[in-house]
Length: 142
Ligand code: SF4
Image 1 (cartoon, helix red, strand yellow):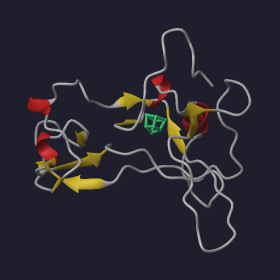
Image 2 (image 1 turned 90 degrees about the vertical axis):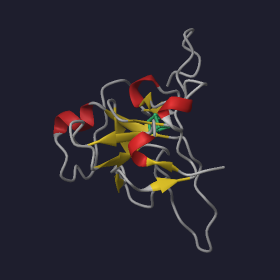
Image 3 (image 1 turned 180 degrees about the vertical axis):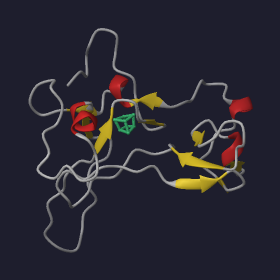
Image 4 (image 1 turned 180 degrees about the horizontal axis):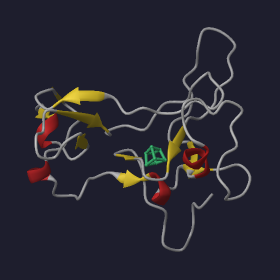
């Protein structure tokens, strides 16, 4: 196993494609939160950073890539298809929440105290390397 730099990784999105200095890592889906209506900010990294979970674009033989949330079987809304109505909208617009749903890719981890978990909201245009496209027959749709 070797390190792949962010610059050459299929899960990395540069802030500026013309000058690839920094961007965001979309390798993993967000973990559940303890907060209601929590959202997800993709971690920022520098182009020269590197890790062992990256996949170099040139060696992407299995077409490993980012799944968009809107196409992902782990993206769900509890009631209907009309977006989320958050208790706390935070700094995000009403339009953002209308195009948002919860990412249920990960189960919460056990903890040393009683806790309540909430799945984080992501936007339809978000995506990550842990996603899995819905099946064409609609199985897995939420
Ligand atoms: S693509 Fe799927 S697993 Fe990844 S953040 Fe979106 S809903 Fe979660």
